[in-house]
Length: 150
Image 1: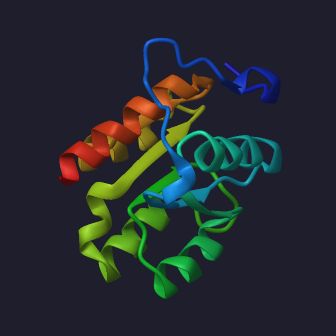
Image 2: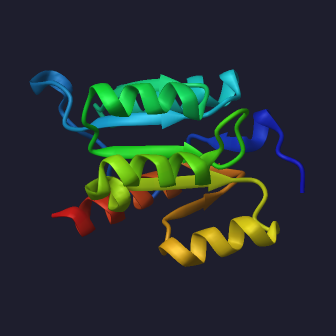
């Protein structure tokens, strides 16, 4: 199944209470890694405007590594297939220098039938979203990761 940007993310949060008061400022710092500008922009805007997160968005694992070395993040939302440094390589590099971040990842992919990706997800017991996904699914994944960290 090929991912189409127009169908990749639907703003549909029926049954999920995501309303927050942003007046007090961001509640969480998020690193978002996605090489497709259109998808990255939609997710960035959603995380900032609807969930009141402080978001740093990058288009590659290389940029993500620079950010990780300079700052701490509560969540890392990461695409699996990116140029230069993909999601798996990014995960191993990050968790080597900051082991506590291992539980902070949410991965997404449109290549769920790839055996190497499946093996990686099983190996680390990853929180995964399969493209296309609804924003309500992202909300639930975020809540699940934050609950595990609490």
